[in-house]
Amino acid sequence: MHEALVTIATFHSQPEFLLARARLESADIECFAQDENMLRIGGWHSHILGGIKLQVRESDAHDALAVLSHTASID
Image 1 (cartoon, one colour):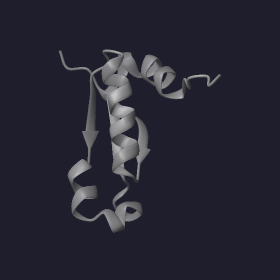
Image 2: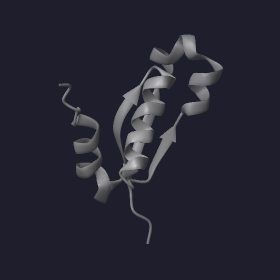
Image 3: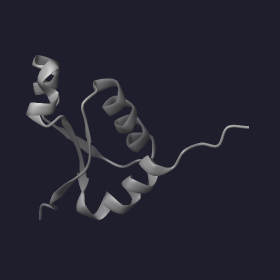
């Protein structure tokens, strides 16, 4: 059975997307990119194209959002 994917974040900057994806992958949360290549091709039109959508399985969405919202404290 296939589980639905949900978009948990949208990015108009590839470096920001790559950082978020790396954070999820380091937490062992599998994630997927929708429209990543469109941003590479026409990055100056990212607002029209809707940016890169970072997606995870529906069952991982809560944990993924927690990982992305967690910021390390700086001493």
